[in-house]
Length: 250
Image 1 (spheres, rainbow, N blue to C red):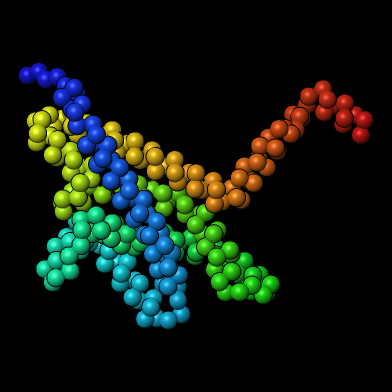
Image 2: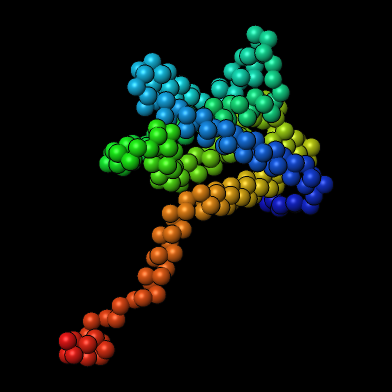
């Protein structure tokens, strides 16, 4: 049994592939933006002194993290439509992705908040900083910097999970692939192309996340610059002629 790959038959579909990739990237970007905001609010609310608010946040997190994303998107698109609340496929997909990211980001950010030393908070209170300034400068920024790699990984997983949106006819990359392979009957070539496009999208998101991190976390740049300057001033090894002369002179 022999087979050969023929990617030439897919050339007329490249504009369609690019449109699907662009929609996937757009859905992911919007969901990441609003999902991170939602996760931050939930992370702080879960630490609230109001027990009912903390419990409500815990219920939200556990409900989202312990149910399949496919079921969540079906509830928003088909379930709400059955009671008269209809929304476009793009809105339903982005809303489901936002809710999903929010739950996972909340736990990641909460872990970062818990890692902030208590002494820093007490020092900020002694300086008379307002509650909002303590929350933003002393708690949130260091916490986000610590858990930023984990957040980036979660964003990548959500971009890949956006393929589920094809089940509600959202014209994202996987839905485009299903259409193309049904037209051309070149399933292997089609999904190889789609896998390559998902890989490119992952690299783009990683690059964007790195750029945002470099801009947002100034302390990271300062530490790196100090490390480079310290590396240029490497001390001479003990036992070298110069060090021997200096010890003799001393």
